[in-house]
Length: 286
Image (cartoon, rainbow, N blue to C red; front, side, top):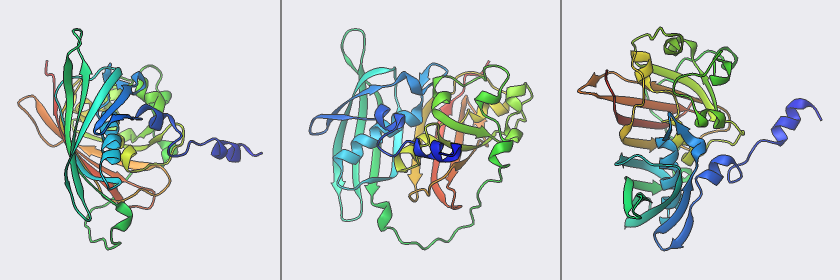
């Protein structure tokens, strides 16, 4: 069998990949789900916020009568740790085309008390039922060909911000947003990359919740270092992505009072804007 065909044959499918296993939830009772947060999705020793959002998104998809997240807003209350967690969901409203629910992810402290990590509210619908009409001025980001971009595996040494999550992603960064890795940040607050899952699993609405938060922080290109913890993250899923690598563009225009925003766009291989997000993050200055 040719090498390319062999590689294609071993690509993970939706429902049968590391991402699916690590975001799995088990219904214990109506509205109560057990999960185990994997250490494989940590970055700078913190569990990635997009991965956590996908865990909550999967629980809400089981709770609500509609299958796909249209909009989901999360407030990150305390830092999550790898290990057991509980997701509690509630149906707020059910309509013909949209249903709305809320969910919280909780873990236990050293005394066995529940600690709420994240609280979200989301509206779900059916992406396949949406009309095809598109009227937009948005343009996909201009990225060099994927073979001219660079990932953590191309660096001569460890890249700041890369840890376990880097092994689970196909991430190829635009060289024009990589000045921070060479000690020469541009100061522009931009990050662009080709994105996919390392095992070849195709993108779907749940993995888009990860994609908006999987690139290195734009703070690196502003010249800052260290962890940039998310305070709030809102994601809009616009359509089901076509097969193939995604293009992700993230920008920051304003850092003030120790907080910055990150606006993300995710484009699929068909040139469609499939997801957008905005998050507020804390920057540790000095």
